[in-house]
Image (cartoon, rainbow, N blue to C red):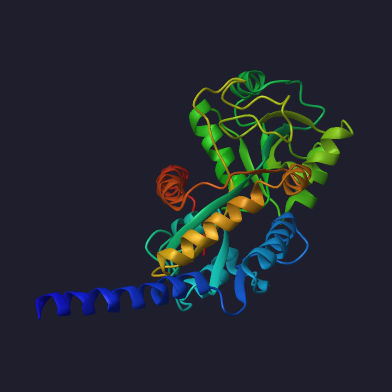
Length: 323
């Protein structure tokens, strides 16, 4: 009887195994939605849609990019945090996923507890640049000039609390210099005033500043990341150009609502990494001023935690608070 019961148990387990595995492999069985916290037309939108097209082929189901801009990316983040954790809603998050709760009082999601990281898709190449009239050609010279002319320099940002603002505050803190913050509504007007000499310094995305740099209307001093960018390999980092230890990496990554099945997260991670390895897409990213990454969910999780701690310190020291 014991042998008979064992045989029946093994037969039942064998019969169930394909069903369990098949359920995992079957995902997705309907369209997958990727929510983007920015309006259509920008570099982030281009990247999200390029990924969506390629993932549609790999997953066998439509991957639909939905633009939900507003409230400094909080609207989209909150929407995804509240979405069912069934593997059919993802957030194409940016650095603001972690900084928004530090800047605003009324944020209902937690950047770590409310989401499960899938992969860090890319870093946005940010460049420290100056107007052509400022007599500096390196980060070291900029720091020396700022110290010799305390509080005489004005730096532009794309808005209060944005990554360009926080990165400049980190630069000021680490270098021990003073510069006056002039916030703008986006890169366009800020770059116009930087070229015109109304402001002197700015940290901005290469995607928007690149044409001005190539035309000689702005002088690029360094990239903000820890390593040089493939998009501008001849441009040194801030750390190697005069401020050791400085690192600021604005990022774009894919996260899902907390509780999303691990099998779904792992599958999406694998497919995104394969897409990011395609030479044609990598070239497109380079043209958009992005560096592809594609790390593991565990690595991305640790990165977000470290990033939140870093900018929390900067925001507190600079007393930045938004309503």
